[in-house]
Image (cartoon, rainbow, N blue to C red):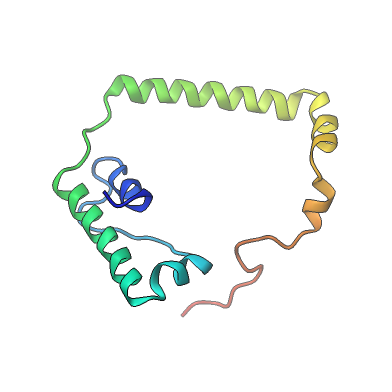
Length: 120
């Protein structure tokens, strides 16, 4: 067990963990997961145990027919999306009426700073 974090790591495709894991933790999650000593060790325990479990008992490799089906679904959905967004003249009118797109455009909601200092 271990909840969503543990399950997310264990759910990675075969051959992607191999005893190592790189995770990006952002903002408030850092404090939530690591500020308290007991919670920090529990979080690290979840990372470590899921990484070990995945590496020692990886999920089965996806069968080729599953991969082929996913490719077909991906291509079909991408085509339908592009037909709707780029080729249907009604889409822009609908989008503008259904979303507060002007207000969203003025909001400062990016998760990354607009400029970063060069890293050394």
